[in-house]
Length: 268
Image (cartoon, rainbow, N blue to C red):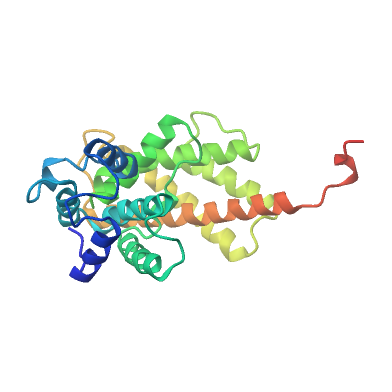
């Protein structure tokens, strides 16, 4: 359950106009659609049944039952919507107070770099896998998501290799794909320190061990799965590595966008 304080609840209730049982300008249907789009849950799930069952009370039941991170995600999206409809103005003291609550909630997660585990494309299969990975952490069940995490990283690295012109075959294992990617970055002078190169190289052997975990200690097969703490350690290491790779790729994209155009690129 979330640990919203009474003061924080009052501020969020004021933001969402919950005093009369309503939530902003939502109908029952549109509120449910919004919540499903935001966190892939129905606000009318029986778990959230509270009091009269009004829209406001369903939100209160949701606060009671869900983790800080999940509550923070929905409240963040509702805050953005409140800005969109003119309920609150971004940058004002009132907005900033609500944003502080949202930030605190979202930072309370067993995997701090969880947001890095997002798809790189609009492909439905990639997004489905990414949602499954994040869902395992939202439920605080990392051991149940290890096989999906392995699939996500495989898809993620294949996409990056394709973008960098690195050819990888379907039968190449995860650690070998990552090794090809790191080699391309190193050869291109895209990593600034030798220490970063060594850390990335060490991740190759770690991902090789991840292959064994996926095959023999995850729900990919009829296995005895890892315990919570070991699964969480794996999630945190992988998510941290992906976060670094994302930041590195973002820097490379910025450098590419600001690079001067040479004479060979002129259209005449």
